[in-house]
Image (cartoon, rainbow, N blue to C red; front, side, top):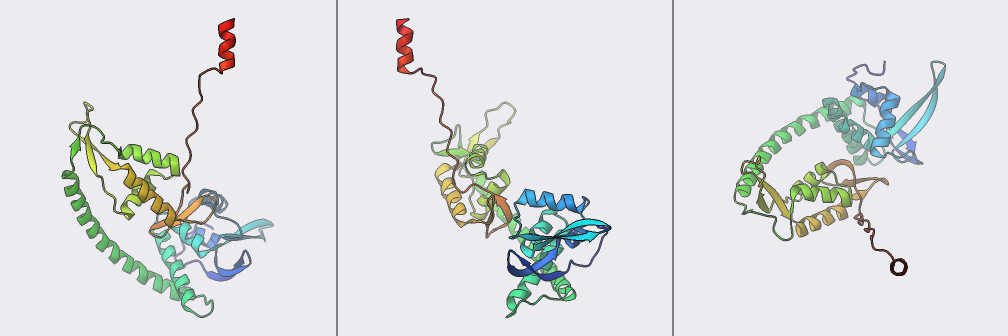
Length: 279
């Protein structure tokens, strides 16, 4: 049964994708390991469409006779396997991602492509998971300290009655970056975090229900410079997906800003206007 819980990691083997000899894994084995509730054929097709994976680049397909009919198999790269594991957002997804990373590390450290045994990769992967958990605890403490510093900084911001010149409130900034570059609000927050960009001013919320609250804003010039630097550092991996060295996983983004559509003029041509006057 495809969805049966199985603690054994999916086997990694050599295979050819797009003419290149690479490490591959059978997506059916990965699907079973992750204990995905949806059927395999629906799961793999949805993930390919959602994240823009490309045949003969990220995966190759074969057809086999199965129970009197034909069944399509997908052999995927470890990069694709890592991403599929990550997007499940489950402990097993994290485990299999660490397992694939260990397989890659061992292959790269060898003079020739050598696939580690499942047992070796299994043991090493769990060592890496334990280390990752220790680092997470340390990072959580650092994040808490950072949040405390940010809170103190925000309390020290000058509060304005209206948005200052060249300023932009957070809400409008996110909408603009979504419209111009296709950056989701979540990705925008990650960009600000990666480049340590914090609010530069606060504006009183005069709404009667705001109860004295404030809205935070940034200098538009600084945001534009940060976004341009972020875009320059991104790598286009598919027609629709990009990667950045400090942001995990692929994401959608438009590298060139979308030009605003010209407004239609309501004025009549001069010839039409003259005819109207002479009528």
